[in-house]
Length: 275
Image (cartoon, rainbow, N blue to C red):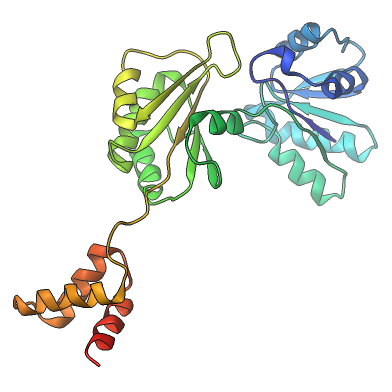
């Protein structure tokens, strides 16, 4: 089985390997068969000799079983989505998992990815990042998901529908803070590509006027705590509270909470300072 990356915008980004793979494919499982045929036409590839089947979210479970049967019968299957890599917020994962369980060889034809393209153009740290897919559509579920990511230190990459972008950015401003840096990447690699960078709250205000096109959203990770960390400074902070009448145990708890450090660390600092 071959998982083939499709261009995320311009057909010219397709590799020669993709052209050759499409031309020689016996079975092509495509997220949208019409878009596949359009891509093949743009690439000058004749796919009329292949059996082309649709493979999208709503039929993924049933189609994966059918395609696994083809693989077990020794037939080659090429999986391709509308844009980017199959399995990344697109159909593919179920079939890969089933194929791996049956020891069917699986390989990838690498290529364009909206996730990494947006990440590197965002101007945000790229050394550590995580992909969070589409945020939940319902406001309550979205707020809970984002609250759970508020302390995530890695750069985060999301997909979002244009008509939900303003609401999602507003929810992110609530969860992450209005000043958290972010970038909205729109229509990547296409004619009207646009990248907007700035604090989340500013981007939310911009998005309220309406945004069109494919959206990839990159958000900076949570900043490192700026509290005290040196044992001597922690002990001094506890001593200052004690001198003001705060019981030691309470003072240790307050200093630990304010500086984002374990209570035991503060306690040990106080003990060491009194020796």
